[in-house]
Length: 204
Image 1 (cartoon, rainbow, N blue to C red):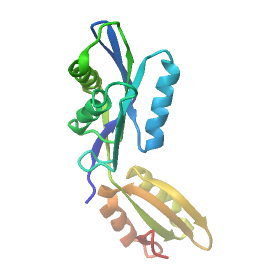
Image 2 (image 1 turned 180 degrees about the vertical axis):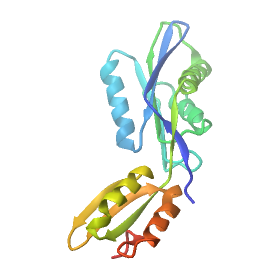
Image 3 (image 1 turned 60 degrees about the horizontal axis):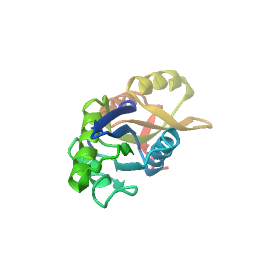
Image 4 (image 1 turned 135 degrees about the vertical axis):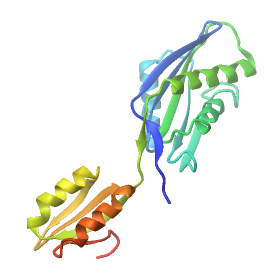
């Protein structure tokens, strides 16, 4: 069964400095690879003169991610992107992308120093990150008389759901997405109204 998990509530950026090198960690929500790459593109646009823009992302439930990826962007292999991802793997936050922008300060840190610096920068940012809870959602198809529509819309809104499709024919036929926890309330509402039918979206 799908479970709720934490996601970034809003973007965050923090700077970590060691031996004159600056590591600017930018963290944001990313529900897919395109979202993570948009964060990277924006970081490159905002800091075009930085030597490295290293990144990692973790998509979906952090307990069983849908996808993970990382990139060292020119740093020695395994010293940047992987340490960023390692932090993400242990923080219990999903749908998250991190870009760490590095400005070289003239003093070489060595491979071990880079690993520690990228890890520390990411840890510092995530420790300050505000999160929200992403609830697992289900989709249902409802058909009803138009007289029921106002009450039905109020119910959907109160349950934290949304209408994702509607067909206005002889009856109102809509597809909704609601939190899994609201399934029983939806079934109770349907059971008390003969003019309303509730079924999975893959049935006609």
